Length: 126
Length: 359
Image (cartoon, rainbow over all chains, first blue to last red; front, side, top):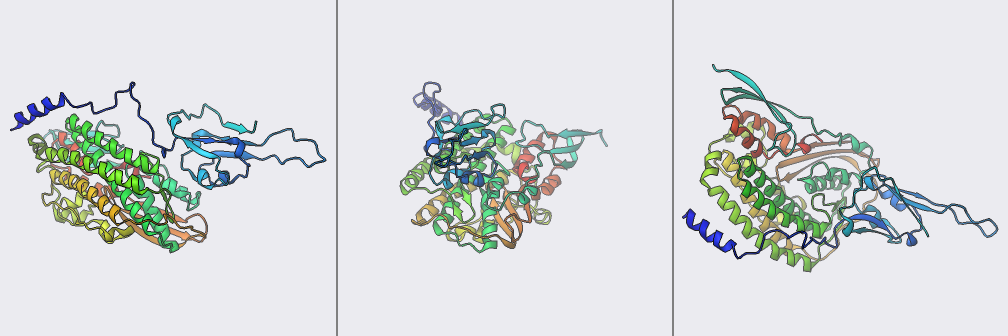
């Protein structure tokens, strides 16, 4: 009977745990594989530009400054790796093709805002 | 003859997941005629194929639609692989089946929630989307994204599922199947649901065949057509029968989709058992040349990808014929004669995915 099903399921629901996460006391953890935001370990980068070629949405720009020869003065600029985060579609083409494996996704910053008001992010060696 | 008015339905409407416009000619609460207009979400993605090379375009193909995204990417990869005569490894083919069926489960659960919400059954909407969240968690764990998987590439797949993860997923899927069966059976047996759906929007088998209905819309009218029987990507190794209902009405379409969810759970189990350790992709070099029609089974029906390549790295032409586009004439034919309040239900029984329809 329908009313008996209703009463029994209502009774057992009193003792079951809640169906959803009790946010903010418990947060949902992201998985290791989750594609969050693209990050770079800039000290390992050799500015080869492979990530620029593989990116389907032209989100990365690399400016490589050649190191000075022994009898020349040191260059005034540093090589830079620039990411326009709004264009990144988290396809992981750059991560798969990077020869030095310095690119990775950070799942913890999954919700970071990536609007066009925040300009391109420039990374360079310290 | 009563008063005729024209009621515009959409493009903004609470039950519609995506914008479509129908001009309904209504005479005293009964719909006499329906005139559809589409074009609100056209993005020119077929033109974009001339600008992105054939390997990069997989990412665009996946973003044609949010609900059926994996199978769009898969069909594009299958079409280019046929043209370039690429042999995809066996493990990649089974992984593609697993992700396709997970995609089908999440799409049908989404649809179940929407159609329950359309006639006010909000509890069913919340429960089915709760189970869908758990399926999306499995997809996120294996591919990295909940909606856009990003795991297809020309030549195979980009991510692998380890045997331990696969075992854990199969155990979880058993629990989810039990919960889904409880929901689905209760939905189909409910008195109020039957009152709203039985004998509403009848599409006879001959009309369905002549108008070109595809997918669950056709299978609910008794046409046993399921593109997975053509055997692409190792579907010929999976034992299944197309799910057919002979009731030809909206209730039959709901029945077909709900039973397809149960069938997909079984197909994932079969694929996981047959899958062996191996490579997941091959390197593809060179440029495609030739043309090919690829047809696969999306959750909504048959999708056709026609590609034409001329030896350069960009394809010359891509044409996508999506199932919702094929189901629009049957929709327009079943609308006359129903009450105005049944129109949202009928629009949802074709499972409209308008962003695929106009790329």
